[in-house]
Image (cartoon, rainbow, N blue to C red; front, side):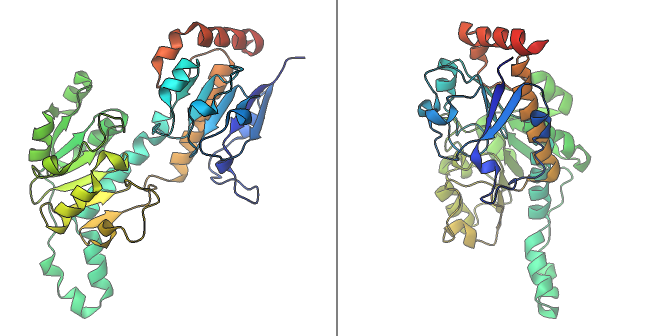
Length: 349
């Protein structure tokens, strides 16, 4: 009898009553696969090594995964992160242990790009202000001329990063007749050329953008990439949008420039501290639109993320390299390659 391929799901995929946290994540394809066993573990953060001792794969939602999460028996082969952010995972520890870290670029690409467009349209159209005016009745209605929106034709959309999500943003923004600029030291120049994006310096993207979207991952190099010095380069009519990770932006510096009206406004789905405290000063400003790190959360987004994670896990089970591996160096590790060969021999046929 073939030993089962065991898949762990972090416990936050289930509510206290046992029902699924996100019903659009369909786990059934895993459950229905021959020789696969699925189990939910605790939601400790970071996860503990003993929780994962008997598993070959992990699908991870919110908990952190660090060195202390890796059992010395060397059984775990893949961590499939539910989403594209992986700052909650110690990537080097995974690589050192021969564990592939996979993310879900296809699941979030369109939903996050849609979120950025939503922020752009709401900010430039003064959506929240006009909503408030309307609810005030005739007095508010009669002040509508004081809050003129900003047209997009000929304006400049800038991005920090044109990877998976950044490129999709520019694809979706084509009908608005904007000029496109971006800063990305790792940019695919062929993609930039195809989409009509002018690649510019870091300083220039801040100086020239009318709408500037943050699309890069959080790394030691990008922490506070958006700081007081660079915010000071922006036009007083410009808007900043961050749907990536909160600590990429110095939130205190951003709050200050918004309070002083040094830029026109901001759309924020992420914050330096999450959940964001109710007394956070930036929440009191009328030139900011905020969301609880969930603007892209739709049925399609979560179904896509779940399907991608399930496929990544089953690919490893079949001895194949999954899509979306972050730590590509692990693919050349003898330990990881040996695991794939063993899985292929055991389950691949």
